[in-house]
Amino acid sequence: MVHWTAEEKQLITGLWGKVNVEECGAEALARLLIVYPWTQRFFDNFGNLSSPTAIVGNPKVQGHGKKVLTSFGEAIKNLDNLKGTYSKLSELHCDKLHVDPENFRLLGDILVIVLAAHFSKDFTPACQATWQKLVGLVAHALARKYH
Amino acid sequence: MVLSAADKSNVKAAFGKIGGHAEEYGAEALERMFITYPQTKTYFPHFDLGKGSAQVKGHGKKVAAALVEAANHIDDIAGALSKLSDLHAQKLRVDPVNFKLLGQCFLVVVAAHNPALLTPEVHASLDKFLCAVGTVLTAKYR
Image (tube, rainbow over all chains, first blue to last red; front, side, top):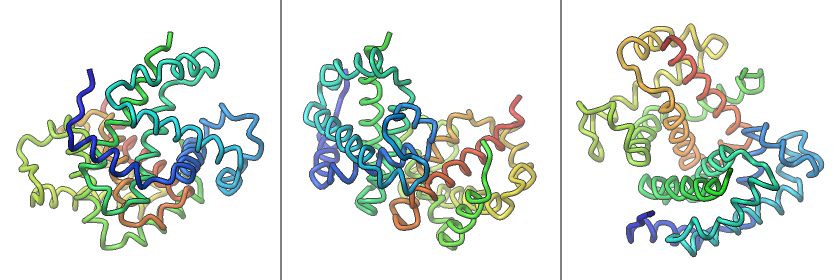
């Protein structure tokens, strides 16, 4: 059973309120594909991923990044029930998409770095710790229905 | 995993821009690591890990110096960090998983202080570099 302190919830919702989900999602996904190029294996139909510039400018990457981070937003509305929130998505990622859960951890780490770049000094150590906890739990929830 | 010419150039340039702040970044990376990944504190029972700790600052300086040294000898990181590699294998024996955690925190610090510096390309190169450093430091473990 996940336990969130009031402070942690505040650090999450407070920051999330200021996040541009479309931009942030696009950036996080682009960086995932650039920093860990083997993750491109899931996106053969995305067109041009031949260079960092191509990846950053790719409209499918941008669109998918927005989709992924929007889903994250759902988790934030349901911090006390991440398992339930991600149950169907977990099955999808296992049965249809065949994504190694390690990729969720990689994306989570990238998201933290994107938030740090965006929020700078406001992304305090306590803030980072809370968000690393959140991304870890989201990764765990997404892996939960794997078989 | 090999550092390309572009990676090496990105890393050298990044550390050039970080300049004198490296020590400060090292200390902050450690501070963030202890808070974010509390299990990493188990390697420092002899340290005061409270906020502003002089010991953490001092240790951060050492960590940063090693990274700068590796960046300055990026064609032979194993050679540059050979003594540190021995130290980690024989005495410190920090579990390899922890180097990735410190690496993550170092990238967060760079991002927070210098977002313009951390373009996706530089992010990729620095991540690879930090991985390479971790690999060197754990190379003689067994």
